[in-house]
Image 1: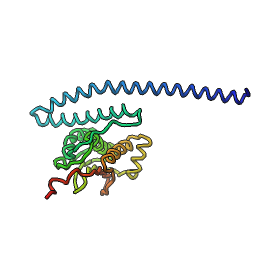
Image 2: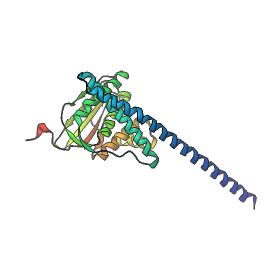
Image 3: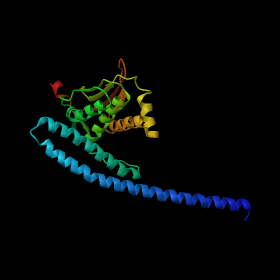
Image 4: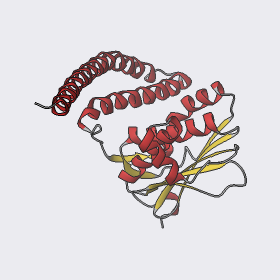
Length: 244
C-alpha cells in the first residue's frame, strides 16, 4: 500500500472514530434531556393542582393570580413536550379548540405585569373583556402573545400596551412599545430566529409559526414611535357586538 493510500485510510478511520464518539455524546445528551423533562413534569403537575385549589377560593384577587401562574405553568409544560419531541424533528401536538382571546389576555395580564415591573416598564392591557373567538390551541396562543409581550418589555421601551380588537372576519392582538422600533422587517427577524435561535428572533419566530398554523400571521403595523406587532387570526365567528 502506498504512503498516500495508507494516510487516506488512517484519516478515514479517525473520522469514523470521531463520528462514533459524537453519536454517543448526542445519545447521552438526549437521554439526559429526556430524564430532566420527566423529572420536571411531576413538580409542574403538582404546582398546577395546587393552584387549582387556590383558584376555587372566594378571594377574587387570589383566584386571579392563581389563574395567571397556572397559565404560565401550562406554557412551561408545553415547552417540555416540545423538548421531548425535538429529537424527532417535531413538536408537541396541538389541541385546537375555540378560544376566547379576551379571556386569555385577562388570564395572562397578571404575569405580564409582573414581567414588566421586573424590567422597569409600565404595561396596559385593553380588550380583555371583549368576547372574541378564534380556533387555536389556547396554550400555544398564550405562548405567542407572551413572546410578543416579553419582546416589547425586554427590548423596547416603556410604556408597553397590549390591545385586542376584532373585525368581521379577524381578531388582532396588538403589542406596542415606545422603543426605537424593529431592527428589520418581521419576516427577516423571524427567519433569523429559525436559522440561529437567537433570543429575540426566536421568540418572534415561535409566535409567527403559531399564528400561521392557526391560519393567521404575525405582522408589523404603523406607529408614531416604537414598534407595533400584530398577531392576526381568523375569527371563529363574528363579534357578538356586531351581529344583527
